[in-house]
Image (tube, rainbow, N blue to C red; front, side):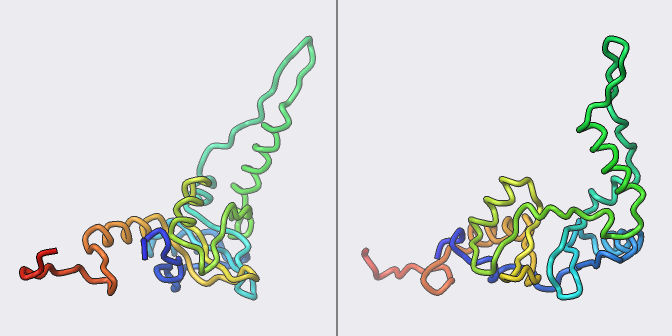
Length: 177
């Protein structure tokens, strides 16, 4: 079987650092730092994925807010709506004290356990993601696959060419074929 056809359930990490929406942001940040992980899924009481928390969400708390863009035109002052929405969103996140207030709720992509490496790599590339959650049909977390898992599998495949049984074939000196 080609690597791109391998189901993600064969390589996904099943022991996943996860958070709950009501968890304290500082505690979550501490866990990420101590485990040297950049992010993890946020789960509701039933274990369903409701968001993702990443170090990028936490850095936003410390970043300067982008003030709304104001335009003065013919004596009138106008705020650009998108600029004001961005400011309000960033302000809400910066003031958030719980994971639920700072997490990313837009799950751009998820995987099922039978989806392939090729699908995972494609989704990561298309959406600029470093990790994808693997969920069942009810969005219950089964595992996670990260870019590093894909790179590791590619390197291992290159280092150990596959034969029918997953071991490198040995050549027979008596074989003329």
